[in-house]
Length: 165
Image 1 (cartoon, rainbow, N blue to C red):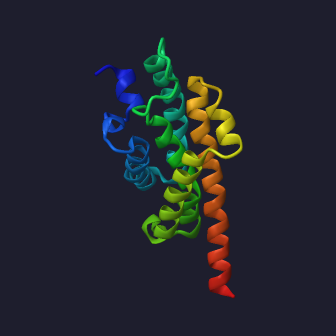
Image 2 (image 1 turned 90 degrees about the vertical axis):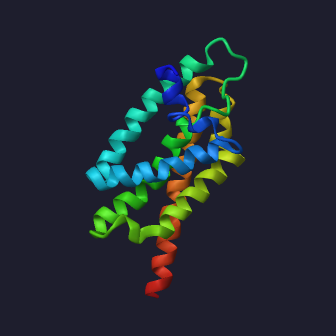
Image 3 (image 1 turned 60 degrees about the vertical axis):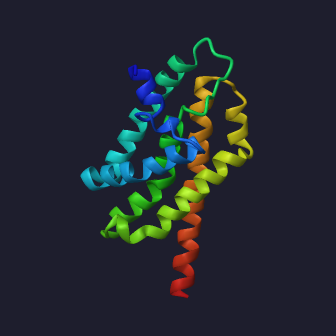
């Protein structure tokens, strides 16, 4: 397997059926946990920036001369989007000085919200997807991840507000 294929499929995860995008999001979870444990939220930020640009390169390589601009086996975009959705959990744990494992509801919310926004493709997510380019492949998941991160923050605020009130 070529390097571009390894990156685009996240070491072959994109070939798992059914729902390769969901598998790509699932594999992002333990990787994000490991990055957080090794270097906190800033290592996760650095890793997602690197993964974005490597993913853009890999997606460009594997979709060159193909009719399908976003084949289902390309899941590096899900990895990046899922990591963005998890940023509030990582930063929240670091800020509070607690284990990231204690914020397990945030993990669930980040996963569910990211998958929802990625599948439904509302508003700017759909716009990016319709670009029909490797950048669009990556951007729709970046935007879905950002929307999911906002949702995680809002749910955390609601949860903590309700618990304190």
